[in-house]
Image (tube, rainbow, N blue to C red; front, side, top):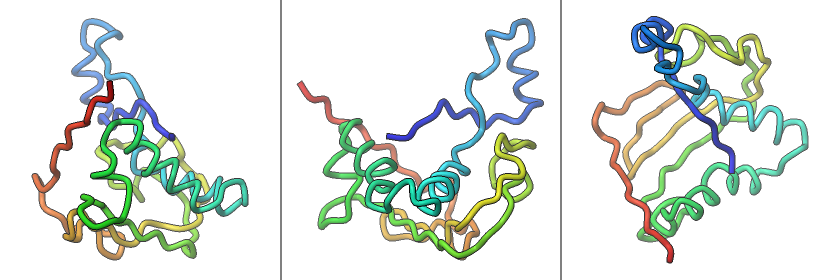
Length: 149
């Protein structure tokens, strides 16, 4: 599984939240939006990782480990699958300005990236089309895990 301690908090908010002690500042770094592009570029495009393994690391495996399978992490009748189309052709340079995160910096600034998210559907509705957000706020649905044991 690929994961991080993501905290996409703008620096001004970090300073406000952390006033009076560094231990109040949200831990982690912004990188959620960058994750798939970096995994594809450094893994699949460089021949270090196959596409089936990328899907296992980013979707199937986490759904299983977090008790969300079989509802999430697979394309099958009855599953609440989100579908992402990744275009492997575009080449671009990752910068804070090229991303949609609410921060003014990118920890992967100036990385050369291969490919880009083209479209995403959530429960059959488009949320990203041609690389642009077209969803609506509040459309997300919280999924509760099943506990094994």
